Image 1 (cartoon, helix red, strand yellow):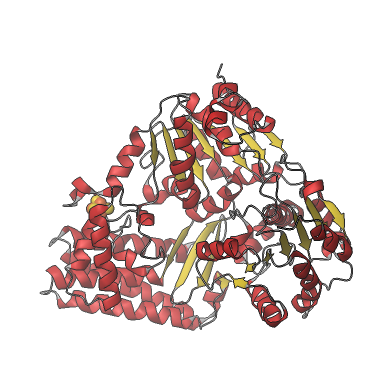
Image 2 (cartoon, protein in one colour; image 1 turned 90 degrees about the vertical axis):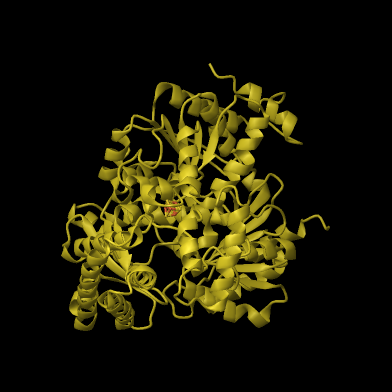
Length: 639
Ligand code: SF4
C-alpha cells in the first residue's frame, strides 16, 4: 500500500518543501483514488475543481506505482511547467527515484540538417530571415535539448522556423548525415528510457493517427496513461484523425524542391518549371476563395467552378512536380524526400476530393495567406476505443471540467468510454464568501444588432466598481472588436486587447498593471491563471455555443438528428456548458482571491436550458442588483 500521507500529510515531505503548505483532503483523496485505479487497472475519470491540487494528486501515485507512465497535458506550456517545476519538486520530496523525460512534437526541435541546408542555400532569403537563421545557428551550438521554445529571441510563430525544423515529410531519418547529433532522435531515445514521460495531447494524438504509424512507434509502450486537461482530448483527437492539407504545404514543397534544384539538379530545368508552376497554382488557389477569412463546407467548393477548377489545377500541377521529382530522386536523399512528400500530398488530396459523406465531414478554412482543406471524422468514439483496447494501459482522465450538471455522459460518450469509473471533487474555495455572480435585469437579446453596445452599458458600471482588474471574455472576434471601440474613450483604466501582442506579453502586462481590462476570445477562456487582485472580475458576453455556421458542428448535429437523437441536448449544450465552466474558472484561483462574475446573456434565465449552466457553475452568491456589486468591491481592504 502506497503511503500518500508521507507526502501530502501535515508532516509530509511536501510540507517541508513548500512554505505555508496546508494539506487538502480532496487532494489526498484524489491521489488515493488514482493509486487504486492504477493498482486495480481500472480506467478513471477524475474531475477536480480549481485549487484541488490535481497535478501532484496524479503525479505522486504515478511515480510511486513504479510503472511506466505517460502524462499528456493540454499545452506545451503546461508540459514545461510539469517537467521543469512539478516533477523536480517531487524529486526533492524524494518519494522514489525515477527517470523523467519531456517529449514534444518534431516541429519543436531544431533540425541541424535543414538549418545548414538553408544557410548554405543559394536561394535568397531576406536580410531578416538570414539574421534569424544565424541567430538560430548560434543558439543551436549552445542548446542541450534543441527545444525551440528555449529561444526567446525568435517568436514561436516566425515562419523562418520552417527552415530550421523538420516535418515527417522532409526528415531524412536514418539516412540523415546529422543523425548522430539529431535533437529529435535524442529526445525520443530519452522518452523510450524514461519512467515518467511528459507529452502533450497533440503528440499523443499524432502518435495514434495514421501519419506517424501505430502507437508505440513514437511514444514508448506505457502501463499507465494520464490525460490532464482531458476535456480537450476529443477535439485534438478529432483533428488528428482527420486530414488537413492546404496551399501552404504545396508552396513549401515547391520552395524546398527549388532549393534542392539549385543545389543538386540544375541540369533538370523541367523540375524548376514544375516547382515554380506549383507555387503559382497554390497562390491562385488561395485567391479563388476571396479575401474573407471563413470556414465553409465542401458543397461550396463543388458549387463554385472557379474554386473547384483551382483545386483540380493545383492537384494536377502537384502530379507534374511529383513526376519530375521521381526522375530527380536518384540524385540525392533530399530530392528523394521531396518526391515522397509529393506522393504523400497527392494521396491526401485524393482522399479529400474522393471521399463522400459517410463517416467524414469535409470542409475548408481560409487563412490570411493560405487555404486549408480538411476531412474530419464525424465522431471519434469508435477509433478511440480501438486505440485504448490496443494497449493494456490504465487510463486516467482528469480536468477541472469533465461533467455537465454533475454527469459525465458527454465526456464519456465523446471518447466512447463505457467501463471507466468516475468521481468529482469540488473546488475547496469558499465561492459563496469569495465571489458574487451578477446577472442584471433588462439585458438585450443576443441576436439584437445592438447587443454588444447594449450589454456594455451594463458592463461599464461594473468595471468602474471593480476599478478595472477585469477579463471581458467574448464568444466572437467581431464582438470583441465592437466592445473595444465602445469602451476606448469611456474608461480610464488600461485596455488590453487580444491580438495586439502575443498572449504571454498581454498577460504579463495585465498582471503588472494591476488595474487593466483585458478583452479576449477563445484562447483566454482557458489555461490562463491570474492569481490575486489584478483579476477581480470576469465578464462573459454570451453563453458560449459554437457558431451554428461551423461546418463540423453542422454535420455532427445533422448526424445525431438522423439517428433520432437530440443534437442540441446531447452535443451543443454540454459543449457550451464545459466552455462556460472554463471561462468562469478564470476568476477564483486561490483561497484569498475575491471577484465578481458577470454573465450578459439573458437566455441564462429566460430559457429552460439556462438551468443546466447554472447547475454547472460553482456555488456563488447571486444578484441582479448593481448595488451588490458596488458593495462587494467596497468591502475590499484598501491597500
Ligand atoms: S534526422 Fe531528421 S530531424 Fe534529425 S537532423 Fe536529420 S533531418 Fe533533421
